[in-house]
Length: 289
Image 1 (cartoon, rainbow, N blue to C red):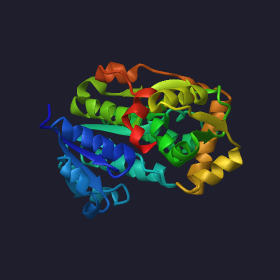
Image 2 (tube, one colour):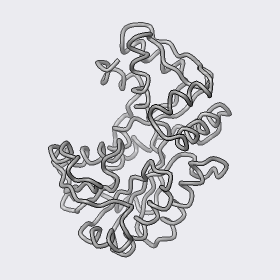
Image 3 (cartoon, rainbow, N blue to C red):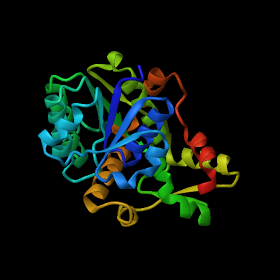
Image 4 (cartoon, rainbow, N blue to C red):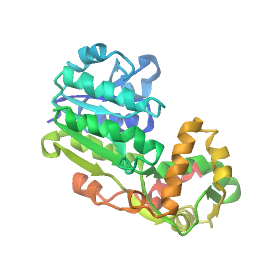
């Protein structure tokens, strides 16, 4: 099983690096494909090989690298041109006759009324038409985004968001997304043509506040801010197009749209493990808060 050579493209982002480390911990033969191999010492320390490979290379350049691997994980980049970058990787995988390709998507990929839907929908379509053995990993908003509120939680015992505290939403812990991807990539024969939606918890912001209070042993409160205020805060972390995309997801949550409120058991079915709840997550990372 573990002698299959796995390449993770987009290995320096949160999802990519977490998946590489998870695969390495499972003794997989994993290589991190990165733009700048000098900047990824921690992935090598974790036990991964590193190669210069990224989705911005020409299709034939990328294909010549992919030929050396059996299974490919395309972690769709947080780049405004991510549709074309991911499609380029899929076409390179076709040219290289990759045995199995897994691609990151989002829970709202079918929704062409939002930016992220318009970005991810063509990627999924291209993959399905590629003739490759493929899998799709759809992810919602990350549990880990609470780190963006770490200073507020430390100093004021509060965290903020643009929606009402009683509106439920599904979230995924990055470590759960990584373990799900690793499980698939290690044994893809059971996962050909499958789309999995990995969710860790369905809860409201007020319920998350209760979990954080329990984990930190002090009262933590959720404060419903404005969309304008949230946009201003998020611009410290990401470019405007991405912020606008995230706010569109929050508008879907406000409407309790299905893609944002549907909990699945896909994580447990794939891994046999219980997902990381907000309570478990905060207990694990309490020192940061």
